[in-house]
Length: 233
Image (tube, rainbow, N blue to C red):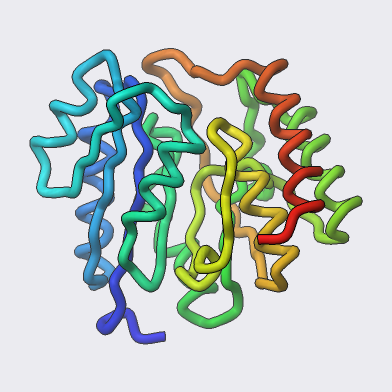
């Protein structure tokens, strides 16, 4: 795959991340320019109550604002629908993912060794401790996915991903919340696409407050894994 002839779409869902979103956009722009891709950065603001939308609009990126707070999954689906690139990246807006590691996720795609690449927080040598959705919870989700699909993952919930646009072409994502990643993972495997993980570093958020509810969202993730396996598309 020739990067000079392809468009890279980077989708960034945002909700109340005024302390980090500007820095994330700047770093994404620098990385995309450095690796030589034609690119578009798409910021979807999920009706933030802070200055996230205002700060995003200061940059030369595509910014869209939802009129009502809808949740990460819905916000991400809006961004994916607007993406025009042959390759699509998703990345969180809280600064926990390093835009500088994007080339690492892109490599298996460009070498045609994968259709979806997941940046894994747990396959790196440096241990990661999550405050909310902890390692034990992620292991449970990974185990259920393995039982259903016979594919093993170390971080099926990671929001840092790179995929070919063809992966999403016939996929009907339904999730509105944090379960979006598990739904995408299961449906990608079910449709016969190649999924690969690469290790990434993970910087636990130091600003703001996570919106994830470990009990309610944990149940939704478990339910979404089963539902995604049972449904086609």
